[in-house]
Length: 542
Image (cartoon, rainbow, N blue to C red; front, side, top):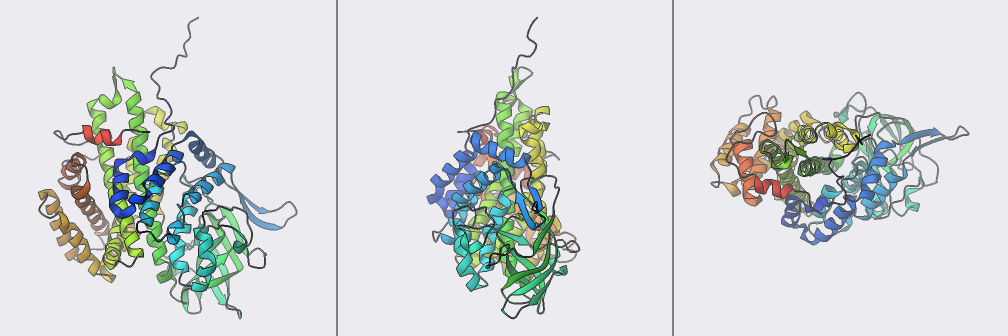
């Protein structure tokens, strides 16, 4: 009897490749001042693309965290059990400085190098949440110099220590944020958690937080209502005397994706915490933290696009249909090139915001202003584009892409998250307007940035002029906030591509995203574009 199970025309697994081979990412790394980190980024990329790291990612995602509220004797413990692979991911990420390490590195470009490392570390996104929050809490914590002096060296340490014990007795710690309440969501000022001052300078917190990710973190920044108004507090899970703080994990969230990350509901029932910043200045204290996590959201969506593109192009390079490899067929080339253009535009603006962040931390006021408006807009638009991009990349694999073992369903489930976390679409769009209202000079800086390419392309000039008119017209601007944020982000992407992009990528972007010669789906690039170099830049390399 003949063998009917011959395996032919199936694509080999995408293993042992290096995401650091992305030209747009590495070009931006060097351009934004992180050239000294090329070897570090390349080293991490090689680990990221290895079969071992990918296996860690699969196991951490598949074997979700388990909450143990009590031990076998009935004692309240509030501990979370993870697959060992999760800890391997955390250990590797922290060892390579993806967390708070840049705050202990005085070299210009430290935050850019970290951003590029985030862009190549792709095994699994859930564990990146505590990595990002640990990065973001440092500038907020500095509002209490005494606390910062003790805990910042532990937050920046490159040693991972998952054991639950007194933070100061550990070689390294991670941090989380506990802000959102069920009645408020993004409106953190609606929080009702109460903070009562104690005689020793600490506060007692009582209340419920609806969404606290990475509940296994060692320390948290918490928003609560103090006598002087909404304030920011530092709260350890284990108190200095070794006792467990009265922070109770009620349940873990059952989410669409991000399965490895233990997002939770937390009850503070007489928990002890210490004030960070002044009473009533809670939002002002955490604003820099929010800027940093929004940067990571933007970087994360750009990374998602490059990852989806990589998987799609690998498949089309090795799969034949109708007598030819998919990559050689005109319509598929249109799709792949269009996905590549979107990924390059997302990456170039995300890394520009990383560069602005690095400069802002060093006191550059112009870059601070550019980041203020540019990051709010880019967070909105880049994160908004990740979901349709992931869907189209999945479709390139056909039915195989819809199967879990392809990795594409996980990518698709993760794609909307960056647009939701740290302010969903409306919040990001309205924050763009808030930047204009509270720091009007940032609009001038934005157009100064765009002026660097004035006269170089008529299509970009026309969009810039239209943007100027739009921002000057305040009538109904809140209704138009999403379009305002989109237009700012597109103008920045176009200007950056004209300055630094590959000519073929730039022309495709200008013809479609600027001039509107484009359909309603990816794969609708107009005729006459040179797709070969666009696709060549996206090919999977070792």
